[in-house]
Image (cartoon, rainbow, N blue to C red; front, side):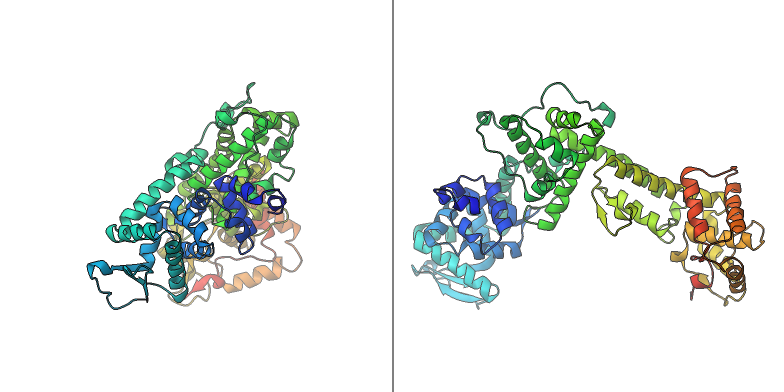
Length: 543
């Protein structure tokens, strides 16, 4: 905004901004400071602001309409009149109809008992019942009064039209016009926009010899064309050292850079459409665009393998939409792996009563099976809460290992002799009844049952000398004896560690465990001292 007002003619500079850039400028500066820019906008720019801000899918959001109407009426009557003459009359009529009841005095209509504040129009032809809270009524009155000052004839036609149409008809017509304008800006129809996530074979993508086709109109194919202004989230991302940032910052002709900027803006808009996010929803926009940038980073790294020249070539010679689909496809393969594990493991039928996966594994799988997979930050070093977009091949590799560990845990439990039938309500009740001092009718809380608690229960029994066999719950006395023998030091005694590892190796019949199985085994053995949750007294709840 400082740069705009430093130009010789700030108003002309503002009016020259594309509608989406005008919106992002207002949104990032924020009101009331942005009013200095807003009042100089054209009707087309204001229409774009309303297109971006008022809608939730195919409906106008009343709270957002209130917010922007309150800003519109701050403009002088001449400016307000020019705006309303240039925006969709169906949208304007809908906003008025939702906030007012209109009575035509020339038809001798008498206002019904008022639901709001009655206001007579300056020409004496209408009485308006201004609905809503006092502030809403004030804004509606200022809107109509300002329009009367600008053009009484225009307002009379508007009020007559408002009375003739239904809310549904006006909203449907306004949405059709809005959809066409949004498509021109790259906000495609939802089903068409889903192409940004369409899966492809990653091995089929190659860096070609020719530049990617331009998405800019041919009339602007020259070196003097201004660069499309990227959304702030994307611009922030490009200031870093990611593959996309490095590739875009490489020296290149102005026309090629303009092509890339235009393609990035179009891709961002299509992704927002595919995720049904309105541009005015800051948190959702940031989340989607951060994921778009990270997905492009992933694709460029896959093609370039950290070769700077190939990064530049990948961005220049592979269409941006294809790059995004490539990055998304790498994540979709991982999602499919996680979904298969969740749905087809031997204990899947027990869900949701019993989730066989330990908490960390369950959280990882939940992040991966989403429609748009995210990297669970619990896998970072050091672990952190929450999720973030996949941005590197190392992220994919780490998450893949986590899925393999979750699968290995289920596999080891099955090899230890646990079957789904052992975890049914009757079987768990029978297992609880075998504990030394369990009360009659005591049951095991299903939420306490997972691969970790089952493995520890079996290992505790085996280390105490019990033979392998049917799943039973250790008695409180057995648990106390185990802790006295094996939890006297900071970790399990070495001989006990070897015995536990030998027991876990025996289960799948292997001389030694490798890879994910070994990682899981070490995790379980480490959780024997101090002793983690097992199926025991702590798992009992009254029926």
